[in-house]
Image (tube, rainbow, N blue to C red; front, side, top):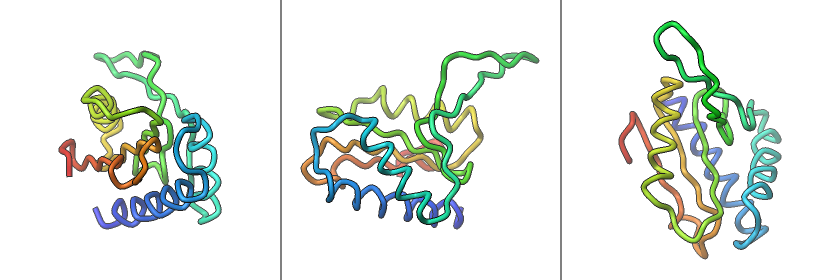
Amino acid sequence: MVEEDRIATHVLDAAFKVHRALGLGLLESTYVHCLIFELRSLALSVLHQHPLPLQYKEVSLDAGYRLDLWVESKVIVEVKAVDELHPIHTAQLLTYLKLTGDRLGLLINFNEVLLKSGIRRIANGMPA
C-alpha cells in the first residue's frame, strides 16, 4: 500500500493548503475544485464525480454512486463541509471502497477550525 500512502500524503498536503487559504464555511464544491487544482498541479490524475456502477449478479446498474475525487484511480477522497461527520459519511466511503476494490479512502470535512479534526482515513475497509 506504499503507492496509496504516497498519494494520500499528497492529498492531505493539498487539503491543508486549501484549508489554510480558504478557511471554513464555504460550499463543499469550492473545496473540491480547489483540491482538484492543487492535485493536478502535482501531475496527479484526478477524476471528479466519477460514476460508480453497482455490480449485481451479471448486471452493471447505475445506482447513482459518484466519487467526489478518485486520485490516480487508487485513493478515493470524499469531501464534506458539514458541522460534523456522522457514521453515514464513513459508510458511504466504505461502500465506495468495496465497489472499487480500492484499499484506501480519505474522508475530509473542511468545516473544521483545525482541519486535522475533520480527517478520517479508511484503509482496507477499516478506520486507520
